[in-house]
Length: 330
Image 1 (spheres, one colour):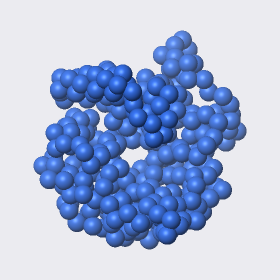
Image 2 (tube, rainbow, N blue to C red):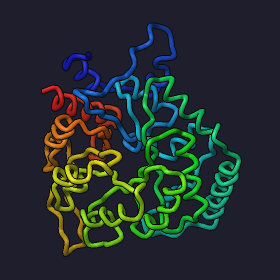
Image 3 (cartoon, rainbow, N blue to C red):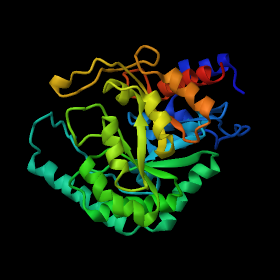
C-alpha cells in the first residue's frame, strides 16, 4: 500500500511524459501491479482525462506509474494503439471558432477521413485483441470502451463500434450522443448482447440530451442492453442528486464518471450547469457517492474524468486518485 506521503509526492510532483514512456520497460525492478481498488470500490480513469498533450502510447506507462488498474478507453486512443493513421483534425490549422475552412483544409480533412476509413476496413478481431493484450500485460483491466456517436453517423459505424468492443472483451460501451441515436443503437446492442450506456450531460432544456432522470429511463426502455454511464458532476449541475438515482438504477449502471461541479444551472438560459471545479470545491457529492458504492458493494467502476483547469493532466489525475483513496479508506 502506498502511503499518503508517498502518493502526495506523485500527485504534486511534475511527472514528465517522456520519462513515463520509459517506465517500466527500462532498467531496474518492475513496479508492482497497479491497484486502485479500496474497500471494494474500483477507481479507474477515462483516457479522455489525458487528452491534453499525452500520446496514446504513453497511457499505459502513466497509469502504471499512478497505480490505476482499471480504464475506460476512448475509441480514438484505441485506434491509435492499434496503429491507425491520424484522424481528421477538426478545428486545426489556426482556424478560429465560426471560421470556414480553406479549400486546402477541406481537402486535407477529406484525405484524412478516407485514410481512416480505409484503415478501419482492414481491421479484424485480432486488431483489437492486440490492444487488449497491451493492457492485460500491464495488469490494467480494460473495462469500458467509450465510443461517441453523432447524429450523422451511419449504421456501419455503429456496427463497427460494437465489433471493436466485442473483440476488446469490454463489459460495455459508453457513449455521448442523443435519444434518437440511442434508439438506433438498440438493435445493435440486442444483436451483440453487449451493454451500451448513455453518458449524461447537463442540458435539461434539450430533450435529446441525457440530462434528466426520465430521459435515462426512456433510453433504458429501448433495450435490456441499454444502460447508463452516470456522470455525477453533470448530473449535479443539471440539478439532480445522483444518490437516489444510483440506488434505483444501479443494476443498469455500467460505470460512473467522477468530477466536481456546482448546481447553479440556468434552465431559462439553455439548461447549462455550473463550472467544473477542483475536487472538493464544488457541490457534487463525491464523498457520499463513493461511500454508497463501498456500503452497497456495487460492482461497477467509478472513473476519474479530469475536466477542471489544472496544471498538468497527469498531476491532476493523481490528485483526484488520492482524493478518492482518502475517502474510501476512512
